[in-house]
Amino acid sequence: MAAVLELNKVCMDFGGLRALDEVSLRVEPSQIVALIGPNGAGKTTLFNCVTGIYDPTSGDVLLNAPGGESRRVNGLKPNKVTELGMARTFQNIRLFPSMTVLENVMVGCHCRMHASILGAVVKGPGARAEERRVVDFSYELLRLVGLTRWVNEISSNLPYGAQRRLEIARAMATEPYLVLLDEPAAGMNPQETDDLKELIVRIRDTWSKSILLIEHDMSLVMGISDRIYVMEYGRLIAEGSPKEVSENPAVIKAYLGEDLDA
Image 1: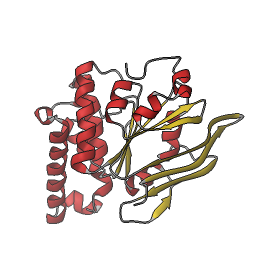
Image 2 (image 1 turned 90 degrees about the vertical axis):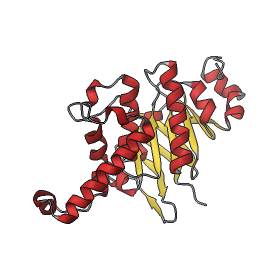
Image 3 (image 1 turned 60 degrees about the vertical axis):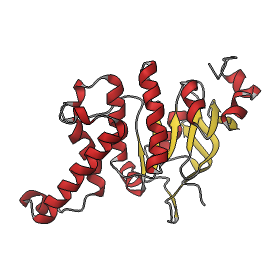
Image 4 (image 1 turned 180 degrees about the horizontal axis):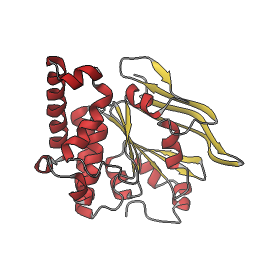
């Protein structure tokens, strides 16, 4: 079975600075893959190349929908990449603060809706049925992330960890087969991080999604990842299972001798 995401020698230059230098990686179906490295290693730049925010200077970014054909996504707009089946969250929370929790998730469903503008305005039978399906699907996603008790709450009133989970629910609303999580545990307390760990595994196991995440919390990374890629100064310096990566001398050196199991 083909990898759902494949990067082949991706480079990204900003003027005279090479932020990514021939980075290659794969995410297999229903796999949790982590991308780790010190600050400034190029991890978020890579995410931006994958999701259409940046057009790589060279190399290939390939998406392979389950049961579909391979598609090169270099240069596509972010909304087109989303339509192909990829969704992401960001380091900084980007919810609609004045919307309710339910409305935030419903916004994510927009790219899969079929009602015309006229149909949505006059509320014909088809539009009403589709709106009902969107509400039901959004509520089911809120159940998945444990936020049903806040369904009608304004999103800005949620605790920080709950806002992070709401972002994941909104990403899932686009019905992706590949979810990219950019530092999902940032700013979370230990209990929130444990809840997040369970949620990510549940998304993979229950919803059969593939997940690529950037994360600095090594306990989370080592606890859930099937495969880990390590970056430093825009290049990959190691890849393998959590055990292989944690014992790799180059990785230990990049982390200044930190104990990756700590």
